[in-house]
Image (cartoon, rainbow, N blue to C red; front, side, top):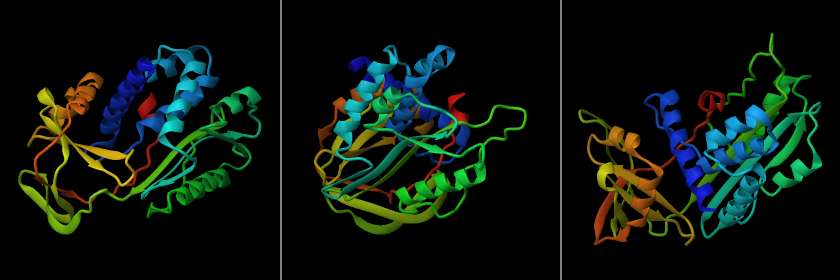
Length: 288
């Protein structure tokens, strides 16, 4: 379904821009695939104005059952097993869940449609919101191998003078993989700005990479393959002082064109700060 693929790619780019707006100058990390899955699950159960809002947010022109079927197909191809995917040095633990108050009933057909890729679990929100938040937080920390150093439980919005919380949507992704070609580890200078540097751990390697020129985006795309032959990471490298231009000029068409033009280079040297990032994102700030 090419139209759905283009729609979800457009959603991913808009979500990135929104995260940049609410996150300030910090780096941001998110999975557009799981973010879209969480909203598609809600779209499948929504009606009227809420359904139209979610479809507009996702750039979808198809109906909810078609969107669910398409996402289930993509999910099956991307993750051979769920919630744990382990293959040739690439480990991914992910989960999509709709946690509902026990007073909120869900149709069996709705739960069945989501079951291949989204869990639905009951909990006691209205009776004991504090304990429910702690249970969800511990579940997320366990899924991510307790990668978050700080323990900060979820904060439910205040219910005084407003409807109680009946449904919480959570998407979790924890990825750990080994590169196909081993990188050397050392320390180097990272330029936070043209005049400010700090020492960081660096991964570096000399070899052949697949690289694509992104043309008017003023950037290069570089592919780093994992040991799993079906998995790779693509890093976009803007020209000096052109990061803001790259982010604001990026469109689905330009992104796809850049990836399509990637070719194996002659031997080159690549060095970058060691990749490790943890982040938690609150949906209300980015879906309004």
